[in-house]
Length: 382
Image (tube, rainbow, N blue to C red):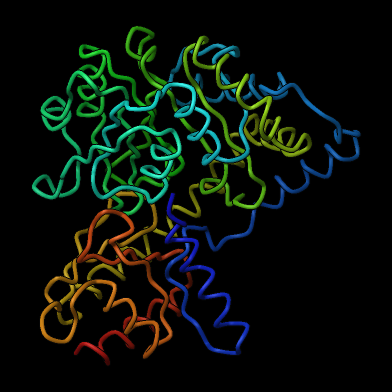
């Protein structure tokens, strides 16, 4: 397995700050907002209630019930408590799901560009990553592309929408067709929905948990509180899958992390049962990300050699820098290196996402930093 390029970039930014360097960190996939105060208070409430002991491996019944209720009210989903398992963040949810469905030698379809962890999970399971090129469809996966890529060895398709790193959103109708193709060909789906609510109008949040049972039997939803609720350090996530798959996930987790922190589960359940405050906080963050996006993307397109489509979700600009490649820059890694050394701007090279020639630029930072960064980029590239 390879180390996470996104975490390596963030570590680099931290080391530069420790040396007293004024760094503009545009690498991190982390909200720059603090966890909403009322959610912090829920955690204190859980501590005061003495919720500091082990919970069931699948998570507290109250935690799982709150997820069922939330998905029913928000998406009209008809899921059962027995189909939900708690996890220590979305990343462990993905690992649990993959490790319980894959055997060595299975083929796993992964659309490019992909989140850096997807192929590493497949490697960990000793399965094979088979990549689907999506540049011709502007990085939006289609059902036809999936149908063309499936073979007799294909066991699983891994997707995320809104996408990290591209910010593209697969339309709900297309997403359903993708699931239908997979079900017809006996292929399972693992969907990473950690950016679920960061979809900018006219796009709207859409969860595969809302599908009817005959389709959802083949789907595992990996959910997370990290991005949506600015709770990255709390390590709280979950899976929603059919009961057989969920039992396997719980069995696996009983021998690894056991369960997420008890009072964190309590806080998450309370937050889900307070949709007025919770969705208001999420809406405020989404609106601010949209404001930053609307300024940043046109500004990036004015930088010499940059080309950047408008993302519909998440908080990343995925910039095509192939216009800069030639005698001075041999790869997008060289471009990222120049930004780091000459401007102290940390971005993530697209090669880690299967897209050499691109940079992922996070706008989960202040408008002041975005302005400073673009000014420095123009000074370097013209």
